[in-house]
Each structure stands twice: as C-alpha cells, then as structure tokens.
Length: 271
Length: 310
Image (cartoon, rainbow over all chains, first blue to last red; front, side):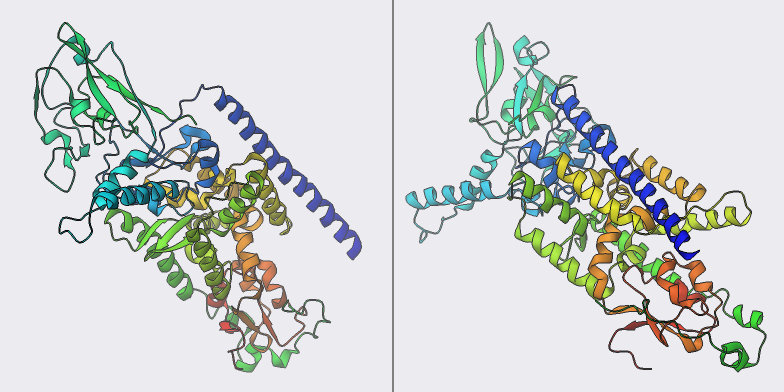
C-alpha cells in the first residue's frame, strides 16, 4: 500500500518535472527566436550609459539592479520596460529628454556598477595616462598643479556610447536660419551644465536664452568641444554641423536642438 | 549534515495524561483555541519587510544613500550586496563566454556578504522577511484559503523537489541563452524595481502569478519554482538560526502546519511522527514565525542552535 502511494507520487513528480523542464525550454527557444529577430535590426538598439561593454556581453553582465540610475545626478539613466523585450530592466538613456552631460565629472555610473557592465577599467587606464602626460609638462611643486581636470577630460573622451548624426532636412543651420529664445520650451525639464557655465551644478535648459544668427547650439553646448563637433561653412551663408571622431554620443546636442523632431540624433554604438 | 532525525524510529505518541490540555485541566478544544489571534511575529516581520523595501525607495527618492539599488543587487552603506542566484547565473555564463571582466571585486564582496549573512540568519529568512512577492503572496493566500474552504476551487499540491528541477533548468537556460532570462520572470526583482523605479507593464506577469496561486495551487511560485528561494535553502542548510519544536508542549493540533508556507518542514508535529523529544526545522523554513504565533502550547520557538538550553 505504502509502496503504491510512493509510486504514484514519484510518477507525479516526474510528470511535473517534465512540464517544468519543457516550459523552461520553451522560454529558451522563445528567447533565441527573439534574439534572431533582434539581430535582423528590426528593433531599434537602445543607447546604453557611458562605459557599457559590448551589447552581447552587456545583456548578461547587467543584473538590473539600477545602481547607475540612482547615482546619476541628472537622472539621465532609466531602466527599460518590457517593451524592450530582452532588455527589460537594463539601463538606457533617452537623450532627447535628458542627456548625459558629464556634470558628475567622475562617471559615477561606471564606478558604481557592481558587475562592470559599465566597465571602469578602460577609463582608469586612459585617466592614468592623461595624468602621466600632465606630469611631463607640469611640476607638482607648483601651486597650480591640478592633473584632475585633464584626467577627467580624457576619461570623458574615452566614453563611447554612440555617435551623433545630423539630419540636413530639418537643421536650421543648413537652411541658414538663426535661433532666438529657449530651445525646448518653458516646460522642458532637462538639465545640463553648459561648457561656458560658471556654476558647478547643472541648470535647467528652460532658464537659458539663446540668440544666434545662425543656429549652432549643438556645437556650442557640446561638453566635449572641438574634437567632437564643428560648424562647417557650406557657402551662401549656410552651415552644417560636422560630427568628428571625438563625439561620445552623450546627446547634449540632441537635447538642446530646437527643431521638432530633433535635427541631430544619436546612433548607438554597434561594436 | 545535521540529522533531522526523520530516518529514526518514531517515538510512541504521548499518552493522554501527558497532553498539555490535560495537564492544565481544560477541554482540548478550548486549549487549541487559547491562542487564536496572536500575530506578534507576523507584525514584526511585516514591519521589517515593508521598512526594508521602503528604505530602498527612500534611499533613491530622498537621496539618503543608505540602501541603494534593488533586491537583485544593492549597496548598504557603500557595501555591495548581490542576489545569489543572479551571481550564480553570471558565473555560469562567464564560464561559457570566457568574459570575466564583470566579475569584479565588488561582485565577490557582494555575494560573499550575502552568503555569510543568510547562512547566519537561516537561508530562506530572506523570503519571509524581505521578499516583496512573499508579502503579496501571503495576502492572496488568504483569499485562496477562503475559496478552498468554500469548496469553490480545489487545492493542487506538487512535490517540493520540483524547485530543484526549476533551479537547474533556469541555470541551464541562462547558460544556453547567454542571458539572465530568469531576471525577466523573477517577481522579486520585478516588484522591487517597480516600487523603486516606477511600475511597468511587466507587473501583469506578477499579477498572473498571483492569480494562478489563488485559483490553482497555494504559494505555487514560492514553494515549487523560485530558484532564489532554493539557493537560499542551499545556503541555509547548516544555519544556526532555526525554530525549535518541543514534543512535551505539543498538543498534536497541527495548527502550525496549516499556517506554514513549507509544511513539510514541520513533519514532526503530527501525532506519532516525532522521533526525538526536540526537533529543529530544516533549511526550507523561512523563519516567518507564523507557527510560533499560532501554537497554543508554545512548543515552537526561535533558537540559535547550540545556544539553546532546555
């Protein structure tokens, strides 16, 4: 009697286990299918925070804890929803709403990541090299000795989230138009620290007023500067912003762009 | 291994004169109902659970920097903490891809701290004292019990070993897909992220799980699926903090088994099942304290093994 009961429960266990393994396997096949679909490029790749390792590694290295979201002083980083399917819970930046303006000055999101999905190692190396370079031309006994600025600058430039792309059709500069006023309206909530800003903290974009004969906001507000984007003279009083290799894809240019939709967008890095 | 004593020959059931209600000289039913609505440990536990989860929320909202992150990975006063099952999947995948760069010092600090902490506190203590899904499931369980009592639905039980099957399957799933797929399904992480970073459509999945638990099988996810709980079970195999059962004070009413999330851990409370005068619960026990609250004879108690005198 007892044995028979044991037999039934064992059979039930095997049956339930089969269902369990089967359903997990089904999930696995589903994931593989989505991945294939994903590779075909039908899904838009999302822009990862600074220092993100290659997407294929990022997707498992990120444990979706959200520490980078919490540490970001301008709250540029958000966690993806289930509409991003397999990227659910992973961090991304929507630069049109809030760009990464590097006003934290230390790439905190990269430092805080417990699994180095945002990899600090590369920045450390770059930063150390910059300090070495600085030491060659500066004497640490001098009162003005401060290698940190060049260190941070080098680290900032080592970030590669993506590259900006200019859309000629809507760009004001290409049309030879100027811009006057507040780029994104009074109600826009994005904040950033402009390169010419004297303040330590980022300020809201809607408090700024610009008056440009030829719109060049993307060039003047770029936190990287000349190595990332310059204005190219196209003749006939028209200009075109030209994106250079130094562009990190931080997206400040996208955020400040006054046209709707933005005349400049960020193409997330591929490899 | 600590012996549970299950393989030993059971002691004979206590004779009538040794039953606690006879000793007190009252009726059995009166004795059984003498502690009907005590909720001391439940309230303490719920307070801790809600407080800790709110600490996550307010650390972010008010920038308190006390407990940052979410339940899948966090930082307490700057010390990293990592979810053990997540870490295990990471290790598995890294072994496959050979990409070890993300296994940082902080990663190992996090996982070691958690393992030591929950080893001391009894493994699945995490479940009932921290897990937000446990909290929701505990509430919906009442509805399930009501429906079963009214005979609207039938209770479906499975073998408790099923979660080891799920545990291994999810690990293999992570290995083969090179993706933390479980984190997309994990109600613990989903709820934790939802309350900290804002809700999303994925909460529908949690809702579906809860509904399934209400209409089909009591505490299905916690009992038979959750690999996080299973990992904590493994961590807590030799935990010093458990619940002690004293046969002398037991009245064989089995109220404790009725309220227990993992009733198989209280196998010794049934008449004629105990093999020793004193038993300790195993590592499946979540140390929730419901059995302690409900026991009329106070036969159950939190103890630290080796430091309990009787």
